[in-house]
Image: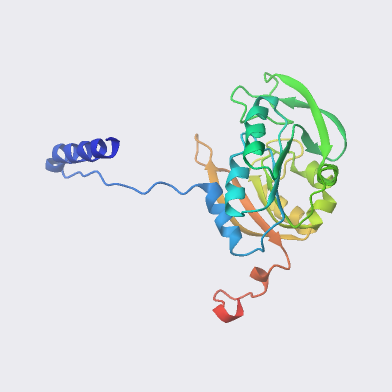
Length: 252
């Protein structure tokens, strides 16, 4: 019913616009950034043993990763208790998926967490008007060890400027990661955030290089690049073996 209605509306609009030299054209739906990034990964890394979702929220990325890599385990880490019911249901649907209600950082303890009205903008840092609550703070290495999950890992960061402390508390896990997908920024959004080019240098110290990016977001006021998801691969990945623009298929 709805597709037929849309076609009728389109034909009617074009009958009105035609005499003015205008026409409505159908456009393709924009690609899903999560599916796009995972699809890019599938062709350049081996099957991971576990996907780790830092800043899991409602678990959408984990769900996409479990469908992209059938049979893998999943660890979802999310500080907001508001999302627990959804993550619990997801772990019941996928028995190989587990979740932890915590923030991740360089040490164990608690941390002040700013909670935005829409929840999606929450993070360790926030504006003064944002309500603050204390949440558990865990090290990534301890979480992985506690769940007995082995690598190789694919790790996704959606952590709003708190990436550096997380990296510091996850050195052993990073050593077994084959790919990292990280939300990176073109502005200094917090005291510990890095500009995206600085993050590329930082990831180089952990043995990773940027492979691609997806999901660019622009600031609405001036259209300046705000953020993007950068896909990092290990520096010894075959992608980086050849320096030429064209790579022969048999050499890839």
